[in-house]
Image (tube, rainbow, N blue to C red; front, side, top):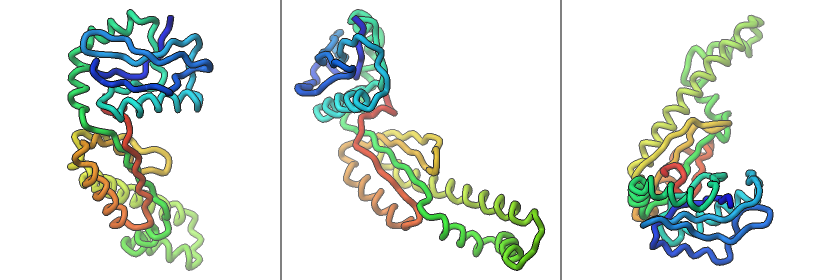
Length: 238
């Protein structure tokens, strides 16, 4: 029977999953497939599993429950296998890699740090004050100059400066936070964000990491929305 695979743990992980439901419209009980020193947490499925809210939440709850009791290799949502044999063969063939990853992630959790421009008005005003060329273009437009190229030139100049300043700020935030992490991953930001940073933070650095993030939020002021998520299962570092 096909299986949905949630995560991989060491054989001695407690895997206390009583009361936790699996994915699917009629969730099957969670169970394990063991191969040597490794276990995979799975449940039987009889349907295609799609990223519905309930199933996404069920997948995440399994990871968080396991993470509370020890290190875990969380699989991304939607990973399936044809049967128990396929899972056990995968555990056996990649045992060294999985064991190495479990050792590397021991005592750590993932945190996400994102930043966006909460209020652009102060930044735009600062750019007009700092850049004589932008200030001159703005004054000409406000003074009634009807040159149709002026708004475009000003817009391009300001947009380029906003991007440069955000990139500089993102680099500074990253540099300030990575000393508290064992590993980090900077991804391309999307939407209004200009920073999308994942950090693997050891438990002993958690308090200092939170303090550093809070201090940075105060230093950069209310014009920047600095958001912290975590602790999370270490999806980005598996």
